[in-house]
Length: 277
Ligand SMILES: NC(=O)c1ccc[n+]([C@@H]2O[C@H](COP(=O)([O-])OP(=O)(O)OC[C@H]3O[C@@H](n4cnc5c(N)ncnc54)[C@H](OP(=O)(O)O)[C@@H]3O)[C@@H](O)[C@H]2O)c1
Image 1 (cartoon, rainbow, N blue to C red):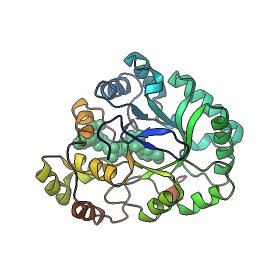
Image 2: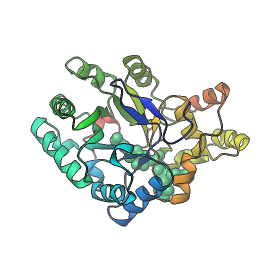
Image 3: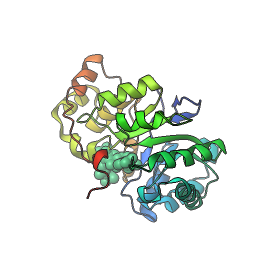
């Protein structure tokens, strides 16, 4: 079981990925994202999750640079946006992302959504970049079982990660089981259901026992379920709080109680409808 923000899971290609990172969706470019990333790095985070569409890669890059932390000690993820999918356009989008981030390589590059008719060409571009050593691990995001099976039927390289919406109201057991079986690391986006889950009585009750907040209980539940997690906050005290999860352990019974909160309920877009408003 991980005991610090530096602890990692080993992806199927041997690359080590920290279990907890800072997500920066909806964090404004400029001082907001710079301050959030700087705060996270100051408090021991080494893993940052951004995406081209978040339009804050420049600020993420600037914060990394200003932190003075050697690049190789960090784990940096970005994602290729839907409009850029396809082989050549993905290669170009990658170059744009690393330029904005001011880095030579990414630790993880993901297909953001399974764009129909395009994601296989996008994947070939990711495989090329991986083979050239420009990305240490490649993966997908928002892939359902049928997308994964379809991709696996033709891919030369199996995705190392699938980043999906995952929290106590959406436990995605089928996808989780399949990913485990295939050695694909599951990663949770919107782990706190964007704050909606923080009033959930079961989580409050379990938290009381350990003197932990519902956010901390959820993040601990992610870890004990072997799911990488990237809670987003722009507030330093919450960035600290979300990482303070290594000094307690949920019982099997509590894990089960939290699993049972599942109601297959999303806060974000359904991957089958990524192209609808
Ligand atoms: N691949 C994808 O398609 C996809 C989609 C969505 C998200 N993501 C990634 O996943 C990351 C996390 O998801 P998310 O940003 O949607 O939602 P989230 O992490 O579930 O929740 C973030 C919200 O919770 C608040 N919050 C954070 N920690 C808290 C705490 N300890 N107590 C109370 N409130 C707290 C934040 O507010 P403050 O900032 O004000 O603290 C923010 O409003 C994103 O930032 C992004 O990197 C990926």
